[in-house]
Length: 441
Image (cartoon, rainbow, N blue to C red; front, side, top):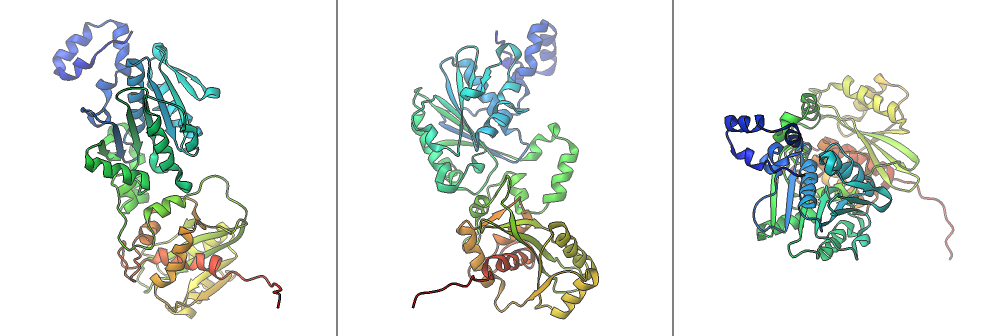
């Protein structure tokens, strides 16, 4: 039996203590599972006749818990509810939305916990309500099924190729017809992808409610060392504003790279065999420790280039950045170290040789500006021929600051990391030897 304790949230502490002391053990057991008493206000559904509610916040905000509790509330109050649960893949839907630490099963009281049927991809609640899981990678699977409600998790991660994310959303909306008042909840980290941009436009029209928040809003429930780690790794980057502060970062007009293109380039899982690996270095212009761009990239057997690591160093003298280049070459077993030689080619090579005589160095000379060199590389990204094996916050901030007119509007005085990436990918993709062939006369 569900015990309604919502009224306690409105009482003062003394009154609440007196009421709690009068409860029996069964009633007190409800406290751990009574969301209205434990939630922060932004995690609770807004009032009003909304059709879509989106929590767009930084990582660790508590988005998943908010989504799981909303689904549980719908299921327990509406026995006829048919809820669609959508994630970027079936595996993530199960591991995060259903079986995760903040998922639906963990949030449910033992006596009202739903039964998960993996083979049917279905959750069955004791009162008859049901929830079905779907993958955004399979938008056609939503063509036909009908639902009354839906929870869409991390829509910023939904597959972009073939417009699958948008097609999935459209098919979902057309199947929300089992109730006169269908509702959809969206939980996501803000990313510059078409679907989130579309939802934010609807916010201006008043057809969607948006809750925004930061990782720091949930500081009381997250380990201190977690905050230390993210501040060390991402402090001062635009990615921190997006992934931690929960800001939606609009693209700079005229930028060669956009956030949506970079998001589409992300790649997980096992990569194809590397045909080549290079380390590219953009040496600092002075010996006073300016930033030195060092980027590792590979060319796979599938003809796709992959950015493997950003090993750039700041405030490092010649010996330090040369050591970082040598370490990267050894770690990734690079067959070539590409170094820009405009800032004293002989000096660059001698500094690298002093650290490691065996480095396979290739000096390159810039005959065009940074932006002109970057344009063909940006085109490779648009064509889907470059992948990022991870998130490279500072590097990606610089890429999004390179403008078509030749200007730079990104962080720092110069896009050193971006320039190193351009040298690496130029070596792999633009300087590839052609195979001899016979042409008919």
